[in-house]
Length: 321
Image (cartoon, rainbow, N blue to C red; front, side):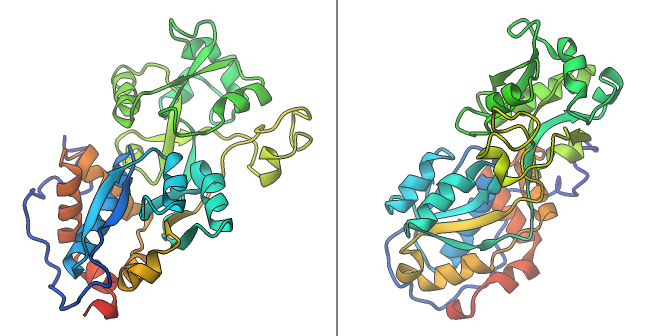
């Protein structure tokens, strides 16, 4: 456990008070701000950091579960109000569709940049020489095989609603692999933990920022560099007949976004959300509080806020004071 608690977070306790001063502010609307709740820990903790800060100012809030694709149509309709993590690699198309239609607004990017792609633990480089070059995968495909995929290798993807076009990538790059979707984040990384404990072959979906790379050192598979044309023009890339013959974007954005009426209805809340700005290490720590230290997502948000009083004070907007 000492190794997993390298963030210095293990001694944080649940139930600590949030050391953010109270504000003499009357919210513009008493309607609750409906905050999106997705199915991975960093998003859940960041959503609750935003919730707790908004409530400290005086706003009513509500955490509302939603899948990672349906959330955008719901925000466009005003059924959901706020999302604290819009990932470029997975969500750009759905997000930009709503922004271009005037139904959603971009509330700014976090300093953290993102990457989402195939990933493996470092010990795989002994089992499959040639990694991280994607061309090494086919030579080792049988080693990645499971009873349900043999003789093809298994690529363990995230839940089905995390649309990553892995089947298209496999076809375009002629990879001898089959996609198997994990049912949840816990299942995805549970399989990694199990495989790593026995040094068994595994290649799976991972993302950064995330706590996983600190607990399980590893690397992303290096596919052909991503360009927008890769997903739109079959003639781009090594396969002239298919799209997605490339990797996912590197250094992708991580944005905050809202229903288009958000800033008009809750102006000061909009300024607060624009001020909130997580770095990659901050997000690693937030996720680790839940996934490594075992706190509930609510308690993890409280603990994160308690650990960063100066940062929180800098984020609080002048309009709330």
